[in-house]
Image 1: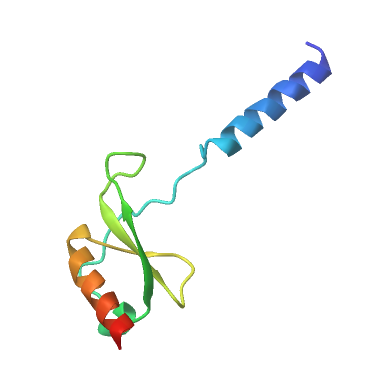
Image 2: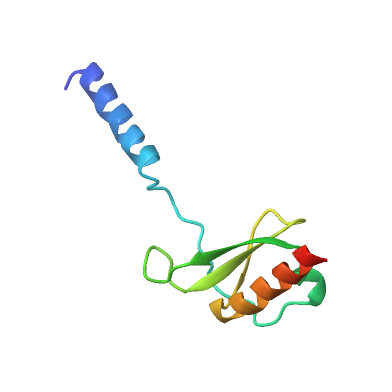
Length: 91
């Protein structure tokens, strides 16, 4: 094959991978059962992780103000956390 054709094919593959988010997903592999109140007060965002896609477990990712990586908790904690965040915003 010509070098130019190989180069074009490689560039098209790289473009396809980067545009379709075909990279490695950042999944929770386990969840924490209990969280201290101090940790809960630092939550600024939540995101659901679906267990039927690329990730193995269903979890709730908590993003904290002082951490770069999220903390994973069981999805049943979502209602409690929503109430805590709502009460914090009222105060």
